[in-house]
Image (cartoon, rainbow, N blue to C red; front, side):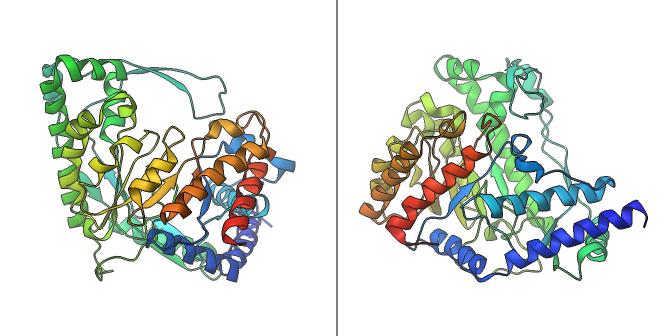
Length: 414
């Protein structure tokens, strides 16, 4: 048997195991709960773990790949990760009974290029320290801007789908999926300038920051126009920033040509953790609201605390989900959101960085659960931004067990 044929046998066997899990009654119910939660129903909150340092997670060599062929090894890795999740993490591992192939596309960007220095403590970890050079220090730098140009490659899509179908199509349906929106202009601007110059300019050169944001807003509008025309968006895109995007749309979309009207608008301004609600509104919300209006729903927030500016966020007419970071007041956030929005809780990943304390974890999750039940607020709970577990995979296993035990107590077993 040649090596590729042997490798394909490995991938096919793993795919069969994956498919058995995906079609199980447990996962049918689990996917329904994700949909119900985003549809503002009070159900057991989906419990999610993402952005995991997989290079630290190879418990008992379960993530060792044996395929020699590079393509099949990549497929093997993705399957082993999903099977590892299912075996070890008592979470809601969103597994669909399909093999999704992403639509091929390219994006020229807007002409601005990052200049940085990096420092890594662990060379195997993609989480590193950055020092950014301010490449937009003055207005002359803005001359490099151009609208992004999007190109689709439908012929490549046909070939890619046909190729995967040839490999595993008799085991699992192969589907072509488009893309979602992940719009974080201030994350990008921070990498072009560093945070400190931006905060100084809010006071000393606010008009210059507005010029920069006008360009980024223009670029995103152009990008959305092109993505709409090319049919590159998809309400079934792979993820909504670590959470499944399952939701009931307010209209019936055309599956032959999805547009931004059919998807979520995902946005945030993480570096605004230290600015006032009014400044947040002025420099971010007023620019993104017109873009967000083009979409079905808006999901706002990531690591920035938003408890004191929920009223500002309600200016989005299609707001559906709000991030509640470890630095947010979860009680105040739940009260402000009520039953009209989803509270997307982000527990502190520091709790799994070295050792875990099950009592601390349960207390943290219980605080969220009590607040959401008190105010009738639907929620999901997503442990993310996990830069390290100290090479102790059991940290995540223990976190999931502790968090899940709280949900069992208040909502019943999954």
